Length: 88
Image (cartoon, rainbow, N blue to C red; front, side, top):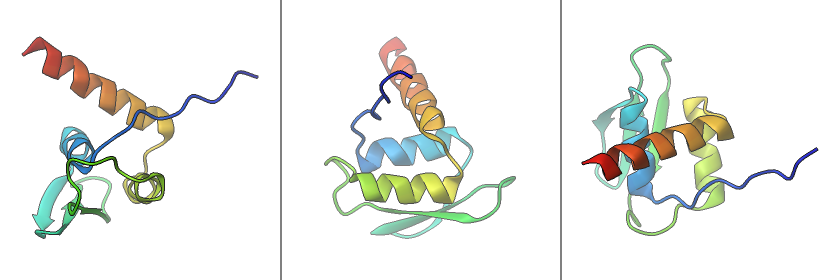
């Protein structure tokens, strides 16, 4: 078995952009943003108190659970976004 790969360091801003890329839309909030998905249902809540700072691992695990994401999903969304940003 190979060594488990860590997730890239993410900020709340990264997570918010990834939610948007995955089809989630913001429905309310200023300090804690609430997102809904038109197909998956449910809600995801993201604190934006520290938008530019690293998102804590427990907070990320919470968002992953609410959004139904795996670690591979997070990696894929993150690196797709990075590629898109570099091409602009």
